[in-house]
Length: 249
Image 1 (spheres, rainbow, N blue to C red):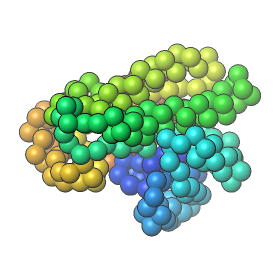
Image 2 (image 1 turned 90 degrees about the vertical axis):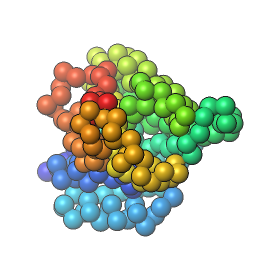
Image 3 (image 1 turned 90 degrees about the horizontal axis):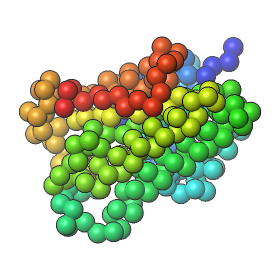
Image 4 (image 1 turned 60 degrees about the horizontal axis):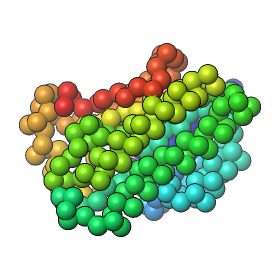
């Protein structure tokens, strides 16, 4: 029996890890990339294999084209034909106002969040599209509620990058709609992951949750549930859609 194959970028922690593990629980063989933490990646791979599914962890910087090409070639050779891609890899930097940012920061943030999403989506389309001899598939881009909120005084660069991901999602969905590929995005809100610590405020969710109508932060598993739905046949008439998982914020 063959199982569907998903590639999750940035799958060693947070939302990416939750999606990778939940996909395995739902019957997917799972390939995922990680930036640098090989120990965390192996822990996720172990949890995937514990479900009885295959796991393939590959180090890759998605903002580097050569790394992306190597990642997809590795999946081709060791896993097989890709059925789904989750573009989760991304990053943000320390909280600050726009007038305190430099161009190097913008290049890094746009590289990881926008260029990485483009490079991986391109390789997925070349494999999935019926125009290229594929059998279709799904692409889920992990955007952010920041794309419509703007993240003033914190992450305007990240918000702008995720706005670009939203636009790319809409355009690509229309471009490949007749080629068997559905493309959607999830816009998480305040989610409990360690990305906030890396940005300088580990307790950010608890501080900011008073601005959420539901008065709480979300979990990585709640985002993963949305991703698995968008990857499934239950969402077969959904494409070009932004799904907010943000507690009403």
